[in-house]
Image (cartoon, rainbow, N blue to C red; front, side, top):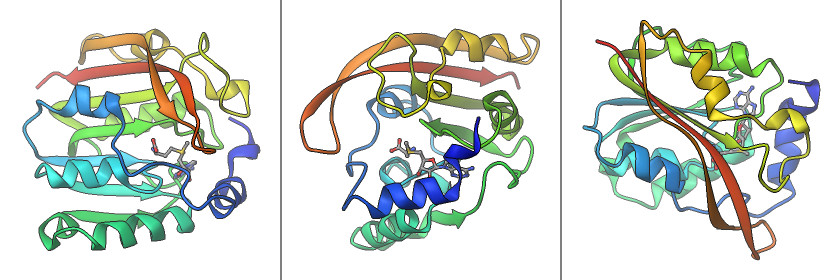
Length: 205
Ligand SMILES: C[S@@+](CC[C@H](N)C(=O)[O-])C[C@H]1O[C@@H](n2cnc3c(N)ncnc32)[C@H](O)[C@@H]1O
């Protein structure tokens, strides 16, 4: 993906809004991780932290990584208004996912939502998939190309089927690879329609 989606882009985007994302967790995360037993989770591109906080409130020990310091500051500040128990289960990490490499086969859940990074999507997803522990779950959610074009670049769109095809079939069982349409609240507070590409896959133990 192009340099357009580097640190300056994301910092500017967060500074330009009081809150880019809501404090509610992504509905695809709730649907796909709601029944998983808590363990260690990586939220890659956590933004303002709603997903990481939701996971921690359910007992997950979360490593929440993002490039944008403004987003992480808001995430930390919001987490600190919650119980110490929840806060203590989240490590907020300011890092660039194009160079920060998570420990291989470490996390019971690796979750990433709408991360448009300044490198090839395949490379990023391969690194994130490698971080899933045997028996663990990979959840990738993004903008589906057949939906409304919310993101500023066509490179931000993909299908879950394409991501599924890139996973080694000897190592992965694909549980979900589909498109889902839902309503969401846009940055200006209006209701918008979103079409998500949703991949949920389990790494064989
Ligand atoms: C569209 S936001 C989504 C945030 C959150 N996952 C959500 O669903 O609300 C994309 C996030 O990815 C982060 N991001 C983009 N490129 C990144 C990179 N190379 N390393 C770490 N984070 C990155 C941005 O800072 C931003 O917070």
